[in-house]
Image (cartoon, rainbow, N blue to C red):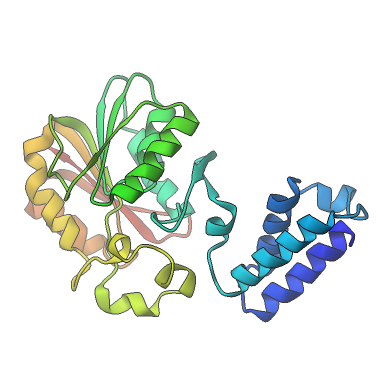
Length: 276
């Protein structure tokens, strides 16, 4: 079958399965299987696709139709212009989180020490280290399987970072100039309402913010002073309805110059403040 014909069949199958961005997903799966690029759809649309590749494509279409995340099928996701390995053990890096990285980069200077709490795939920490000079980074996570992904990403990107397993600060040592975190913040009662790609395939432990959704912000802010240098920046990703609550929590905890930052869609996405 020809390349463009196969793509069009993919679109039809994913649309029938109620995949919202069916055209993009059909194209990306085909590019993954055939090792092609976006332009090939227009310049090589009449090229014949090998039978084995067509079979693999149909197999992946079937999995995507059952709402397995696209990134779990391709094994990667772009974030901050970098390619990250992802699988079922970590959250898929999302564009919203780039707002957090961009805000931290404004205050990240050469030679600083950075702690990424609940690091997951390591995408936040590794992006910060990639776009800075001579900084030292530590990523902490309770999941050893997630840390295996983070270490693989560090190796693939050629970035030196330390990753420690433990419950929040359990095995963290020393003091830091930056504490950044995208902790679990979805209220337990709301997880069932999430899209199936997230609800059924992202790690529950990486989603569950307990009853209030701010459980981990409270725990991190309470323990953080023991690990922060004076003047350290603390920056969190938040849910779009948590700006007021998390910023108030930071002020009550003694952090200064607390701000809520919106993402590109105008939704509250980051809360940051300084420790003095």
